[in-house]
Amino acid sequence: MDHSRDLDELVTIDRDVEAQVLARSVEGHSASRALANGNCTAVFR
Image (tube, rainbow, N blue to C red; front, side, top):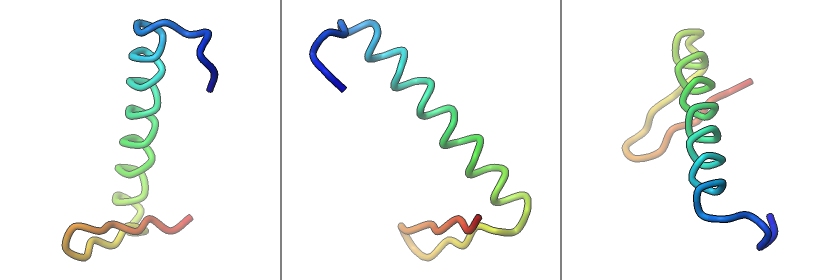
């Protein structure tokens, strides 16, 4: 990451990353590879 991006670009990048992480988590949970323990979650590949 560098300082050449403006706020709108950073917001767009953040939304994309959040969507990817959520999709990966849902996939892991549906494949029974996710374990939740209190506030922590581990997803195994």
